[in-house]
Image (cartoon, rainbow, N blue to C red):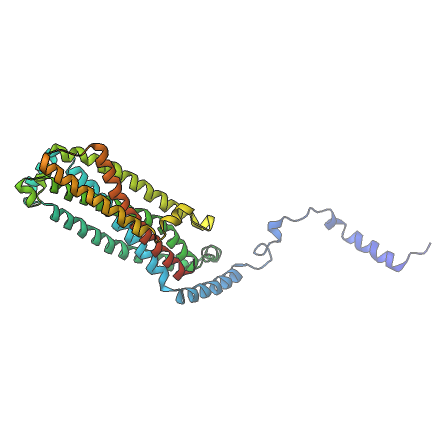
Length: 334
């Protein structure tokens, strides 16, 4: 029997490859570049890293400054609001008990309500300036990390995957809820509390009240009715936190809840004006009644006045912050 030439060649090749055919398949790691006789892939990764880094640097060069400004001012508002809340807590502690008020008046001669308000306002302005400056430094450092490279090209490719614009937008988004909650909370805590202290001074007929000295606020009635203002401020802070939480979740829901949109509507301004006017007239009438007959308003009535005072502060403040927030988002295209 004659053997075909082609069949003979196949048989010869199979015989020669018999030993290799019985070997196990190589692992994936052995077949990857950088192992064995294959070339190292670090050079190609470094070249890709350099290209991506150049692209990120160009992105940073043309990035709108509005991102940095928005982040800095949001942190500044949060710092100012947090300082106002802390100041309101200290003022509440100062007038919580008569002996604390007298002790503060002895430690700080000439301590009066205008001085307290001036110190609080100065602390708020200073906190805003420091918060803005620190936020600018933090933003600049984050941008440096967004384009930084190291000796490890693979790690650099992972860090460069998030560009400066995306990193800046994330910083702005994370600062959003804090700027709303603390700024709104600071206004809700400080403004009605100072208004209540002015109201309490107006109800006092002592010579110290004429000088707006804190010693005029050591009466039992003042400390008793201060609890009503504390309840109203606590409710206002809770509402401020809910508004901030709704703003923080807007990027996932693509819209604000309807009740937050209504709070941010311009119609809140006339409502707040009318409400504030009613609270003012009621407070003036209570002051005259106390001076003429010595009668103090009930705790329930003082609580209603305190809630009205907080609401007349919260509504325009919330409208202003939400309007400014919409303006910021329109500038940033968010």
